[in-house]
Amino acid sequence: MKLGIVGSNFISDWLIEAAGQVPEAEICAVYSRKQETGDAFAGRHGIPNVYTDYDKFLESEIDAVYIATPTYAHCGQAIEAMKHKKHVLCEKILAVNEREAAAMFTCAEENGVVLLEAMRPDFDPAYNLIREHLPKIGKLRRVTAEYCQYSSRYDKFRQGEVLNAFNPELSNAAIMDIGVYCIHTLVRMLGMPKEIKAISTKLENGFEGSGIVLMQYDDMMAEAVYSKITDSVNPGIFQGEEGSILIYGIAMPQSMEIVYRDGKREAIPYTPAPNNMVYEVREFVRLAQEKCSGHPYRKYSLDTLCVTDEDRTGLYFMRIQCYNSTSV
Image 1: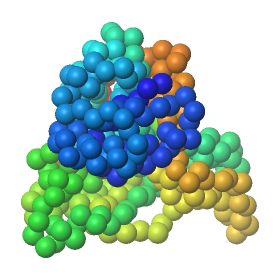
Image 2: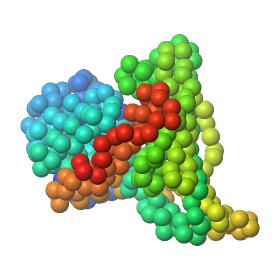
Image 3: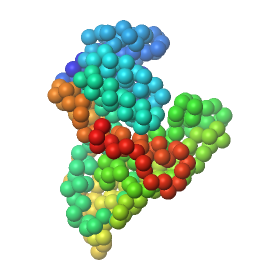
């Protein structure tokens, strides 16, 4: 698969490193609005072709594109690529809202290509291991997915400079950046909740710096805890009646263990990949080769955006009233 890169930030660097471990993936082009930026990026990675015209980029020999631009640009760039019959691996969060994401998946089906959200927890084998070990902790009663990471860009904000990452006018928010890892993990592992309640901390410019989303199920509850303005060392926790499973690192799991009610601890054997983006690249290549536009991951993406849409409306304890995404 010949892959073109859209966006030249650090996450694209990581993707290229991961793709280097997948023999079927070849990075052969990059699109950048500025020639000098594209040239510098291509030079670092040995990419032969640089484009500043998006149409010419899409008309080149590439089979697929990886989109790592600001969220507000995802929908337009992805749809244009898919109309050119290119498969699309799009960085999280997939779109500004559920409506945009639904339109993107519709376009993928109409053009017979794959659209996949680059959501690392979907593909990391750590979560399959958690599923296998859940019976050991008895009936599940509470799950906490926590991801709090102080952003280096917040230092600039505190000094009076608002970078894009802290600009709410670009559809940016802590929930869209890192909170989405927590929410996505919860809806994938537990399904859609019956009710949600969301609270958040807003900065002076209206940007959401941190937040908590409570999710109510029939006989249990879950919470997504996230922040871009503080750090946390707390693990994610699956609490059952007989014990708990602790996972250290929601987006990039590093280790897991079971702590039983009697205090006994049991490590879950797991060796993390140095760069777990390799799993999403492998799955993307597989889906594209099989032309599987109707893959199950799209449901998780749509369900996640359904929850984030509710969160950002500011309506509390509202019953989820999204369409049944299983039919999409």
